[in-house]
Image 1: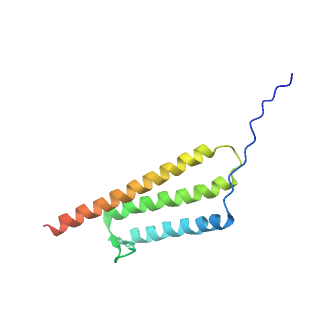
Image 2: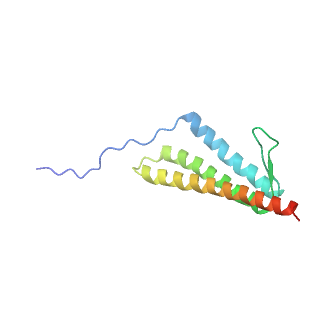
Image 3: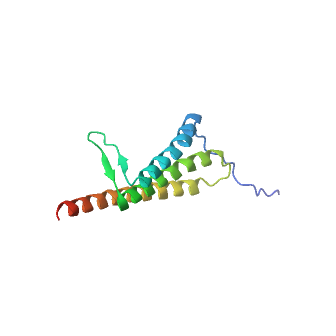
Length: 123
């Protein structure tokens, strides 16, 4: 009787070359854009149907943290493509964490912006 202790075969994720290039270019660009916005204390978020929003202070920092979470998510997709180990659940967990934290930080950033905008105009 032979004992087979080998793990079941694992096929690593395949991410298309175009997606990997997009993520590799977009992730540092959005972080650089956010960092520039922090540096000048004016993080501009363009609007689809309106003039866009200028975030300053704490709201800008919170949005920058959301941008970093998005960039980390994109980088993890690239790393996942090259990782041949069977740890897809870890990458999925990391993607969930960065997605949810990014959305939460963006929502808190907008809430901070709205609350402080209304309190500044009310005084």
